[in-house]
Length: 463
Figure 1 (cartoon, rainbow, N blue to C red):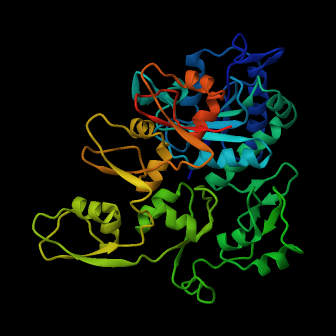
Figure 2 (figure 1 turned 90 degrees about the vertical axis):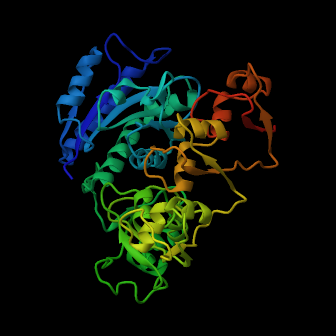
Figure 3 (figure 1 turned 45 degrees about the vertical axis):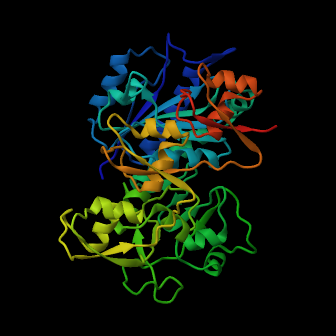
């Protein structure tokens, strides 16, 4: 695809952004943006920048650069560089309601590989209109993939040291993640070429997990990379044995005979791959030993063969009703039976997938009513939008009235207890009464905002 990049240096000139002592957010933003802009040029990626000096940009000037440089289609990626404030610690990425979490998660994990704390990727909506994004950069750049990157907190001593010493490393991590996402050959600043036959070790990786990821043996990895033992280091570049993924018999001599393989292409995410093959995201993660939902172009995924049972259509049956009764999606049934419509006939035999790993013990069912949004439902149950989308194999935020959603139940451990929200409660008040940080409550309960409702249950960590 023809991807183009707009690099934005947030704030600037008379607008310093967040300030702490003699530190100004706008200075950090410009440093990261200039570094990123020059690196994309080196990689041959079409790129522009909103400001390259410490100057004031009006809202319209910034938006005009973003919208007019390359247009407003989804292949235009806007990277808006910012520094947070408020006493927290670590990096986070905000992405628009129209976009997938795949790229922002890849960017956050890349920054984490450079040693920064990874807080979260999330979407933020206008309180007065939850169908719109909170940030004007996202609202007024229609269809683009616009991301707000917060590298750390300017008022946190630990983050200040990291921002002063490691900001260019974090910006390089963004460049690396974006290059992998758009399918551009990544060349490190030292000139080292990182191509499709190499893999950069991430936090949590093991030789076994990497071998499973690329469908090779641990011994092959050791021999090719002259590795003695099992120790790896974050950022280490591994050579990956060539895999002939186009050969129908390529898996005939390993332990994956019962599964098909799929090569990830640019724009893929686990949700659309799962939907395409009529399997669950959980099955894909477990079979491929994935540590996150991030996939990269060229990655080989094993696709589980679905077990099934047979159902004979009766009078009054609908696909929706059958799918609900078996706890699977309509798309799973249609994919397994090669159906091109929702029309059924009495006596028709349907294959019903039975490999769903979700049981009644870890979710409850919610029926969508008029006015519902994924954000509102997630907030009501104290879970994240991503949790609901993963459990229900959703590829967008669109809901339909009467749709049944599986809502993951929150697991209460011995180190937490439950507090029920009362009239007049605020997140800040609850945190203060228990001697906690608001951020800790938000993270523990996967809250998308600080809004609460009466009767909502919150996990409170015991000290």
